[in-house]
Length: 93
Image 1: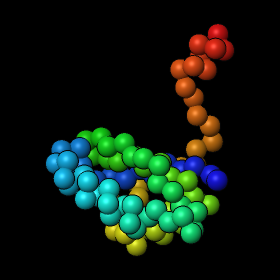
Image 2: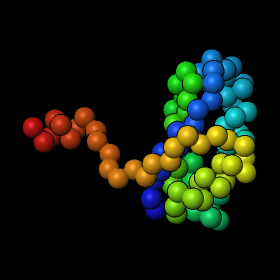
Image 3: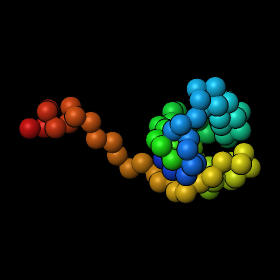
């Protein structure tokens, strides 16, 4: 299953309370996580004004549609083509 990174611009998200972030996570899980459609939310990173959410999904369009229906902004969706880890540098060098 392809893996995607969704970049969302949400002003002040990094300053929100833990309760507010939990509510956002609950909404994201309820609206976007859909095993029947092969959409799986893996995790999200929160920065000052953005979130970066990692999903497994059949394609980019289904993530855009589900995000829009849930009311979550989408600045960019990128398919992950590979992943680098420090162990690759240590083991490869």
